[in-house]
Every structure is written in structure tokens, then in C-alpha cells.
Image (tube, rainbow, N blue to C red; front, side, top):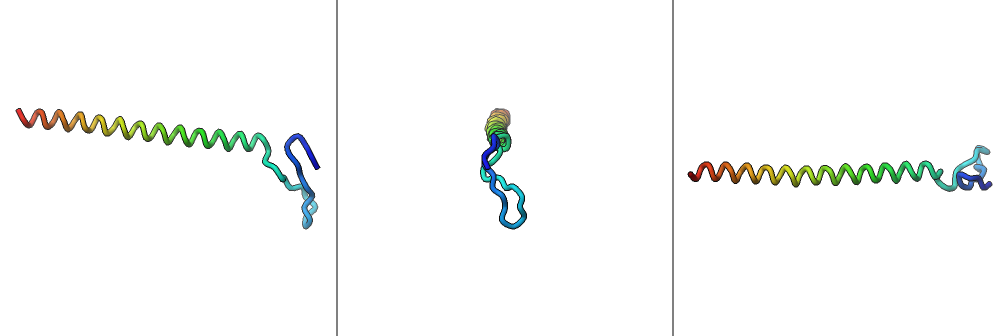
Length: 68
């Protein structure tokens, strides 16, 4: 059976309709979740880079102060 949400077939055991193809809204949700996860990962990586730069700058200032 073909519908606007994909094709379905009647299950052999229970007579229920089972989806053969994912619902487009579910595909969009999965893509959205994937993009959010990628954005969070990039944000965390950028934070680590910035934190490392701050730590290096702080260490440089401490070294400079100790070497006076």
C-alpha cells in the first residue's frame, strides 16, 4: 500500500500495517538531531581551543612575571 508517508505492508503475523520507509518528518528530525550534535561538537572543540589559548597566555604572563 502506497501513501504520502511511504509504503506499507500488512504484517503476516498480526495483520497490522508496518512502515517500509521512514516517515519524512522522522527523517527531518534525525537530520536536525545530527546537525545539532555536530554544532555542539564544534562548539565544544572551539571552547577547548580558546581555553588552551587562555591557559597559554596565562602561563606566558606568569613566566614573564617570574623572570623579572
